Length: 129
Image (cartoon, rainbow, N blue to C red; front, side):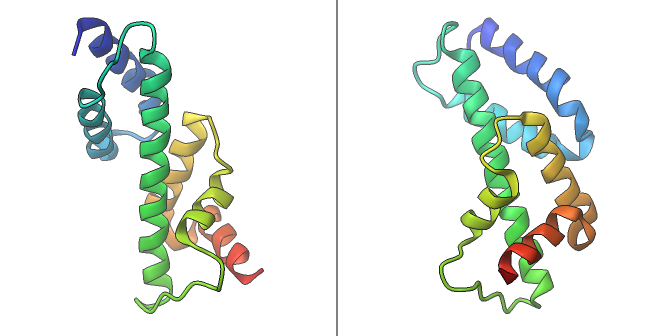
């Protein structure tokens, strides 16, 4: 990685990921690892491509967290209503947000508050419709 890309990633971590704290270091490491595997990354396209990578990674983590919480809620007997997938639930929750802060907040609430989070209550309501 070029020094400019490392600087960009460092600034992004300092500015954006302070919302969630040290417990999310594995998430940050995952993003940095994935960024290191991007091909064709230049100073000109770095902000957009790394931003997209962050959004995609956060959405994947939210999806994983939703699936885990639903397994707990349904006592490992998760059966989704016809026509609904975990991806649909995640998209309903974050509305394909382009806000890192919003995605981080959703992930933080699902992780720290779990079944008691407002986001999980929205999921249950969505599933009941």
